[in-house]
Image (cartoon, rainbow, N blue to C red):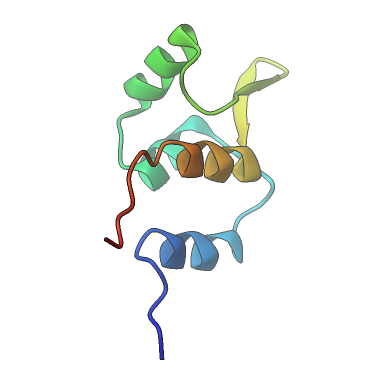
Length: 78
């Protein structure tokens, strides 16, 4: 029986209980970075896509996961 990759298991469990949009604090906790880092990434255009909903910033979980997958520059299983 194969074990799923460590970064996929929490994402699969979390996606079952989360809505389609997330506040910056939720994304920061998920990625393990401070909210200030998300703000810097937004300013630099290097983080996950962020959307303004009224005056609030929101992230789409599917875009956060896609961005996270694109950040892997080497094979963790080797």
